[in-house]
Image (cartoon, rainbow, N blue to C red; front, side):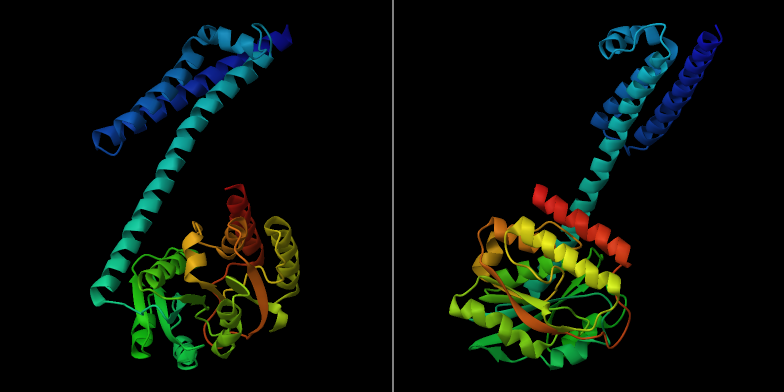
Length: 356
């Protein structure tokens, strides 16, 4: 008897809660719709969700066919769970739709900003010719490090003229002015999207300009431009189509024991997934031919290194590693997140790419 009363009370509480949620969603949707902030298709989805919640609250018996099919028989306490499951599924559908819209809008805005940045570059004119080496340098507030990096850039490698392209990724300091003063081509992007998106933008500019070889190097001056020859040589000799710099094969200053272990763990994971020996899974120093780059399908705005390696392996691109030196940052602070956040972001990027 007591159990039955408790079940009835629980069911009534759930029905009241569902009605309140339905009213709140309906009021919010109507407010957005009147302000023309909600499309008709989205409004129809809201109506479906609100109707489902309303039926569950006012006349739950109408849901008997669905509840019975799911094993929630009338008179059972589990029926409350069944109503809760249906209500949550309806609400979840609305949330997923909202997240999907946000992701789409974010991508559209990012693509628009990239288009404007490339259009400015095209207006300025950039034609490197068929025998050039473009060096893509993603930079966010690196005005103190860029002069030293660009000054150490070699003028030519294996007969190819070296041309640096700096992507000023939503910078708020003098990065753009410093890079131009040093003779680099600068792509100014007004919205910061991340190193992966910046590299992708630089790649597109390099391909459009006719570069034969494309190198990427970090703007924090931790990589040695004098070692660029080491990365480009296997491409010229035909030994590889992509060359990764490896601090593990070379030398580096360990920032923390946790990062050292992280490099080892992710290196093994990438080696397993890509079926290619990788010792340094997060290096920003690499070189590839224009043909190899054109075949890649890059999507990640952050933690893009794993995507480059995995997609290259999937496309059958020959990838090798060469030793490099990783120096300690001379100026400013690192733009990388904390160790745990970096590991989480790197893992997500790797899984998304592998699943894709």
